Length: 282
Ligand SMILES: Nc1ncnc2c1ncn2[C@@H]1O[C@H](COP(=O)(O)OP(=O)(O)O)[C@@H](O)[C@H]1O
Ligand SMILES: [Mg+2]
Image 1 (cartoon, rainbow, N blue to C red):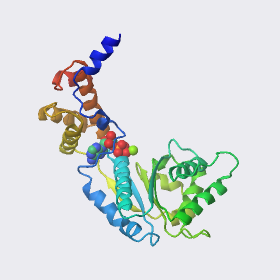
Image 2: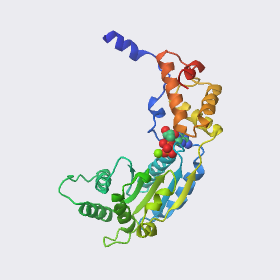
Image 3: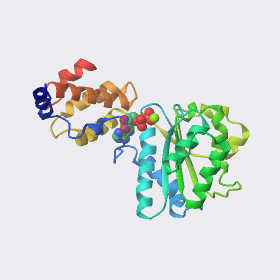
């Protein structure tokens, strides 16, 4: 058995770095989202350059697979890198509102990310929020909170959203230290907001169109460069995947096809992804 394991492990792989074809990987370069990224930078210029002077909120709208999550995460990660260089304390936190169902859990998650372990028992929501705002105030932490799939935010959490947006003005005086990037499929979720929340939820809006065939090709080509060894996949096969995927308007589908075809190549100990592998899965 050890011999089999050893032999398998020694087998050459098509992957230079398999993690880079994973859904959660956040590439350095986001082709066809440069303009949106620049817009976000413009919005956040003063938030980062002059900490505490102004906060900004952004709402990213687009269909599934249009790159909303990856754009927000890339932006957060880049802000973190630049703020480290400038010796500013900045945290970006990604919360999926479909998974984190209560205000309590969301605040706990934020606290954990900024390095505060609180026992999840014994504190009320308001107490936890106060701990958070105090910490932000004392340590002068700039907080970029990404509320992903905000369409799924439970009504219970509206108070949290209001509190965070309003905290810039409240008694703890956390002046403009919190910015929110909200992500949704469309604008309908706001219909449930009451007037109070609507009046504080002021956002710069970014709409992402689904990627077209050429854009899907460009992105797949770029991802292939960082995932596979050179020459592992032909342009014509990448075009084929882009053509098949365009009708789904979901880049995730295209990346999944590429990943699955690559896995078949690996299983077959092939150094190239052949058209027949794609035929098996498409
Ligand atoms: N411009 C891009 N360059 C590289 N990969 C991208 C790009 N846009 C999206 N992706 C990838 O496509 C998949 C879907 O993107 P995602 O951000 O999850 O879409 P959404 O949040 O709109 O459903 C993810 O694996 C993501 O990494
Ligand atoms: Mg998403």
